[in-house]
Image (cartoon, rainbow, N blue to C red; front, side, top):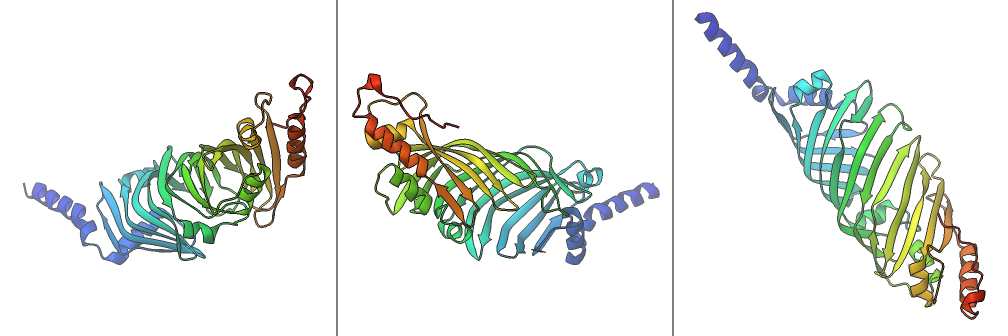
Length: 320
């Protein structure tokens, strides 16, 4: 009987031990669990037990110009899955991402199940992260030639797979789908080029409806599949391409669709699926928007309107 009582008391001590541990020891356990992370990681409060959840209060991570603040990060069943390398489930809400001290993403919410083993971080199952985009952060973060400062009440990132070797800059692998939804944009160079090609006035504020963007990142190359965008609720464009994350080299194709060309120039007929494309080369810091052939094709289309439809020979479309 005494042995049974002693065993029960021992179990009570073991299970209550996490609550009585000094913060410094809790912090050490947490650091071991999350692995080696670049930058500065700070947390103001830690609550955990052996078989339930670990909750981090006011987590803050900072590296160069980027800062992340998470009021509460809940790590479900941390110890046993950690020891068995089965993956640890992280859930966070109301997080904020800053760039150069400007809020870039707000109300960030998501759940990730990750495994960290031998310097490799791997996503165990598909994950969804949502947030709103703040214009002043985008303005500080992006090159305004290509991406205008914009805001969005809700964007979502669906990750199908992800892995990262924390010792290698070029090891990131991602496959997923980005949904930007409805964007409120400021005028920028690329939008001006597109609207000028369509011979439209360029407003100071432009609405863009974005289709889902399927993407893959591998071997330092980010590629995205054909994606529709609706500019100013009227003009549809399509885009696809690649970005070299190491050299910043661009290879992006943009197409003005039949619908856009017909609305912009009041054309009476175009072959189904016709498109006037242009290309973006150069780098993200010095992009080259090449529209010479697109201008020539549009000029020919306008001349063809004066010719009998039966005798029109349309320029060859370079659809993608």
